[in-house]
Image 1 (tube, rainbow, N blue to C red):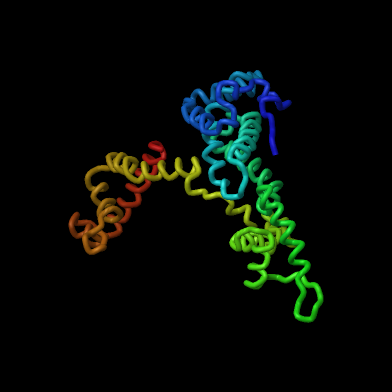
Image 2 (image 1 turned 90 degrees about the horizontal axis):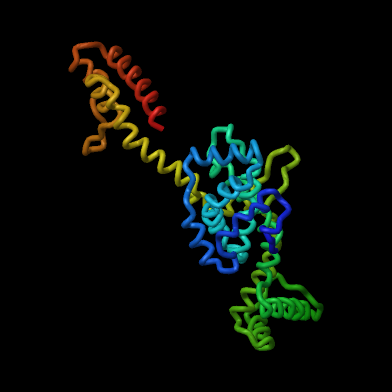
Length: 310
C-alpha cells in the first residue's frame, strides 16, 4: 500500500512540507533529517495553530507538521513486528499527523503532540488491519510458492483408510517427505505450516450484543511505555516528586514543614516512618488533633504550590 503524500488533495499537502526532507525511499536519511527538525515552543505552536485556524496559513501548517515528523517515526517503531515496511508505517502515520494538524484547535488547552497521537495511531492501525494477514502468510516469492505447494501436498495425503484428509498437523515423516520433495529445509515447512494453521485473527473485534467493546489484539499492538506522551508524563511526575516537592516545602513555616516531613517523607533504615501525631504533639506541647489540623493546612498549601509549579 503506497501513498504519494505530496500529491494528496488535502490543503495541508499543498504546502508540501516534505520538500525539505529526504524521500522515504532513503529511510535512514529521512529519519536523520526529521530528528534534526527544531521543536516548537508552546508559544510558537499556538501562533502557527492560530494562523492556520484563522486564515488557513499553509506555511504555518507546514511548520506544525515538520516539527512533529519525529513523533510519527517514534510511534511507527512500535508497530514494526508485523512484517510491514517501516517506511509505509511512517507514511501512514504522516497522513494521520496531517489530519491532526488540520483539525487541531489551539483553544482546547492541549499540546499538538497529545492530540496528534490519536490520529497517527488510527492511520497506522487502519493500515495494519488491511495488510497484516496478507503479508504474514507469504512475504516473498519463494514463500508464496512453498505456501501453495504445501497446501496441494497436504490435501493429497491419505489417512490409514485411504480417504483424503486435510490434517490439522503434519507428522515428522510427512514434514521430511515435503521438505525432500519441495527441496526446502524442514524448518521452512514447519514455519509455513504454522502460518497456514494459525487462522485469521480479528484484530479489532466489533462490540458485543450488550454494547460492550470486545477486547482484541489491536489494544496491545504497541508498547505504550516509550510513547512520547507517556515519557513526558513520567518526566513531569519525576520533576514534581523532586524539585516540585522541595519548592512546595519552602512555602511552609518551620513547624509545618517538620510535621509534613516526619509524617510523609521520612523513612528510617528499618523501613518505618517518622514521628506519629502523638509524638509530635508531645514535642510541641499541643494536642494530637492540633498537629493533625496543622498537617491538613500544610498539605493544602503544598498542593496549591505544586499546581503552580506544574
